[in-house]
Image (cartoon, rainbow, N blue to C red):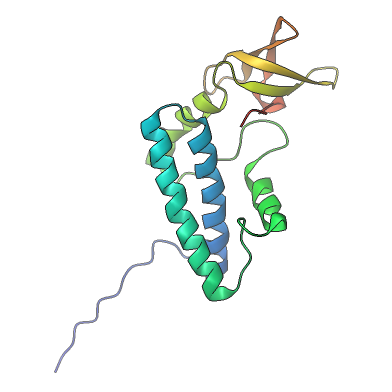
Length: 163
């Protein structure tokens, strides 16, 4: 008797541990999007994404006795370092070019949304707090009001502080 064996194609060629790390990075990125996106529909979507990733993370952790970003501050710090830069916007990852085309503009737009609190490194090396007054995604500069003065500041020297 012949049997038909169905094999499921893997979508990723990663070890369980590497996949586990990627899931945690993706959870942090979904958490950022959940906090910065403005519409209730987007917030609910990213909340569902976070919940799904958290379930997967916890299942893998339980099966393999691994610490996670949810229960180990050292792991959380390590994963955060992979996403957050010391200045500039977080490092978002995209599954493919189509996803990047859909999300990259929105990630930048909402991360540097008008009125958001930021910390900027000025040309003299000092760090100042301010609020974004203007930004166009993919521009190298954004306008920040610091002490009632509007300044053009490089995106690479600016990080959000209010989320």
